[in-house]
Image (tube, rainbow, N blue to C red):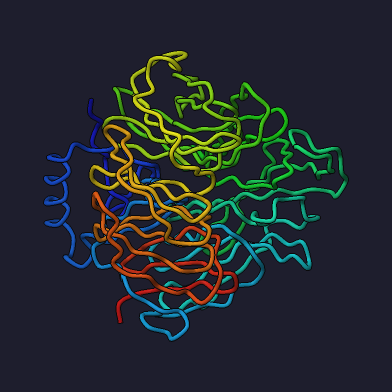
Length: 459
């Protein structure tokens, strides 16, 4: 079972403007042999320094799975002493959204809690200086979980336009659905907006209702001419695709269940078709991203999902969730309800909820919210090892240099060499707490701390 070659890699989108739309979607997974050939072709076309550099245009990077092809990313740094810190930039407001990077621009979403302003900030990648900052919306603060923020959705960009989403509320409260103890919650509307690279607003729309005692997070996904947004919540849930040029709704698919989840979809050309796969709403589903039509579904395995899925040429992998915890591998070639036929393996050995996993080689790495990390054999689901590396994990995992980066809430990043046994290469202090997933672009590792954005590179 294989998948088609992507038409273009993100880093050569500017050399091939006709392919720019494909550059920011989550591309198909090429066959290993063809990938090597494609890399040789790319290297012959690009300057050597740019051959393995790439932008980080959306949640979890150019493939939406936390993988980077870059090979010169730092493994040692210290935010307290300044070792390998290229710069750090003081941020206005708060937020758990990841930075996205396109060439010399960095985009972050945030919230000024004192004013209720939801903001989009553009920084200069070379020095961290602010180029512009725009107020996307001004609203009351919604109810949320203590580990969430008012700006948790990561923006997405195609190199010309940047897209961002927030929740707006008027402050009125209703009894919270789907909670264990009685409390009130602020219902609201999901706002999606588009800005050009000079900070000019192109359009903004509200796409639907949203209510959750845990607050809001939805990271837009770019696919061809569409911007896809997940609207899973404790009400009439939906997934919506907007026309990227004007914000008009192209399709809107209702979800079967009414339960909050926060998964960002991934899109792959696999098993002979283009599939958008996501967990949430008490299901795992594959949709046709062009139409929103359901291709297959798996009921369960639990109620609530936060982490995003990953994939290889054999299928999809998920970690979930609440109230029960699962790690699961799914074959991608089904149709209809495949609950009993297409689960390749399932494990309850890791209690993962928030951090998204990462695949590298034969290994599936999973971070447990409680601070333990797990290594599974991706083909079989056998857990090879488990160990405690941090106190608590919110950030999703990342791989580069053939290494895996685990960033804990206390700002300590453990760099691990993939192996059948735990092999810690380095442990690095940021000097600030962080709940944001790291990003990599052009040899620089970016980590959003509680107060600063850190650019980490070899010096």
